[in-house]
Image 1 (cartoon, rainbow, N blue to C red):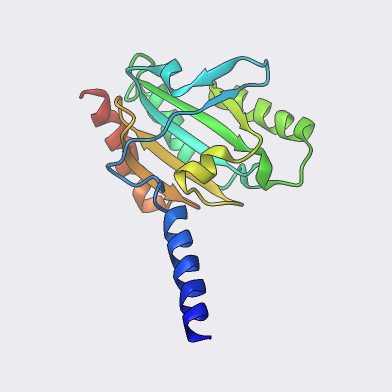
Image 2: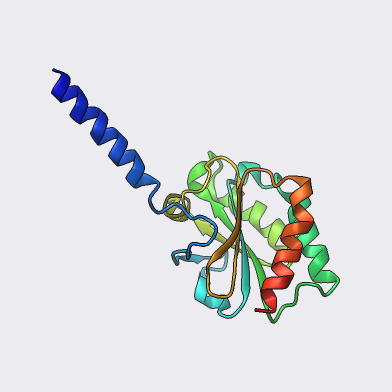
Amino acid sequence: MKRILFFVVAFVFLAGGAAFADELKVGAKASDWSFKDADDKAFTMESWAGKVLLVTYVDPDESDLNEHFTDAMKKAKDDGILKDETYKGIGIADCDATWKPNVAIRAIAGRKAKKYNTVILFDYDASVRKAWGLGKDTSNVILLDKNRVCRYIFKGKVPIDQVATVVKLAADLQKE
C-alpha cells in the first residue's frame, strides 16, 4: 500500500512539475502562436518582427484590470517615447476563461482596439495561457524584446510602482 501511495504521489508531483516546465519566465524565449482578429486576419508574433512586443493576455471579464498600465503605455506612445517603428502593443482575449459569448467578447475587444489603436486577437482554447503558464481569470502583461525573449511578466494587476519601470524598460529595449 505504501508503495502504491508513493507512486501516486510521485506521479502527481512529476506531472505537476511538467505542467510548469514551459511556464514563460523573464529571460526565456516565448513560444510563437497564431490567432485571428475580429476581421478574421491571422497574426503571429512574426507579424511584428523586429519590434518590442507588449502582449496583454486577458480574460474578457477582467478587461479593465490593467487599464492604468495600458493607459501609461499609450501615453508613452503618444509622447514619442515608444515608437511605431520599434514597438507594438497588442491584446489577446482569453475566450476560454469567460462565460461571455464570442459576440460580446468581440464587442469589448472592438472598443479596446479603437481606444488604444491596436490589434486584439482571440485565443478560443487558451493555448497561450497553457503554453506560457499564464493566470486564468485575470490580466497578464508580457513584454518581449525584439528576439521574443521575455523581459517582464506580471499575472494580475500591475502594481502602480512598477508602471514607470516597465515603460522605461520598453523604451530601452527599442534601442537594442
